[in-house]
Image 1: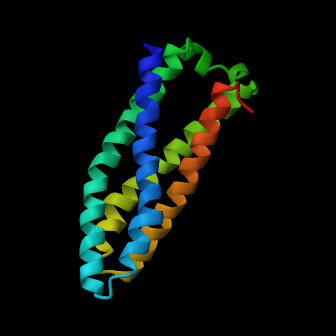
Image 2: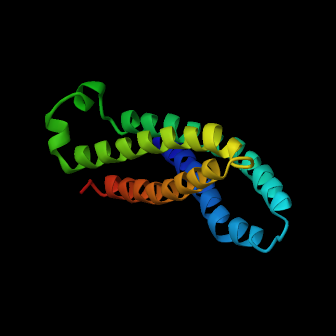
Length: 155
């Protein structure tokens, strides 16, 4: 069961982070070649809405499989609640990863449902949405780094 949960977790991560990277290295540069700001905004909004659906499926899947993986690895709730657990390299790395995940879920909610939808008609909202999106990509890479470290015992 752990193998299946890890597979779904990794595939969901690939979908979400890969999609963010695709936005940064393909979509954004392409949109800069479009001279009409209205058309550029329309395309960005359409692509963003399409990705938002799949992105949130990936996020929900990551949350479910992430917490499942903890318990499928044999870590009990009692262990998670003990101080000693967090003095270990694994425990410290897990709390770092979970903190980053909490941050990215909250910031993604703001990006996708507050600032992103307003970006078309509000320059400040657009700037904030871009900043959050780029920051989330960097944070997501740190989450992957933390995940790799966890599989190796933590840091």
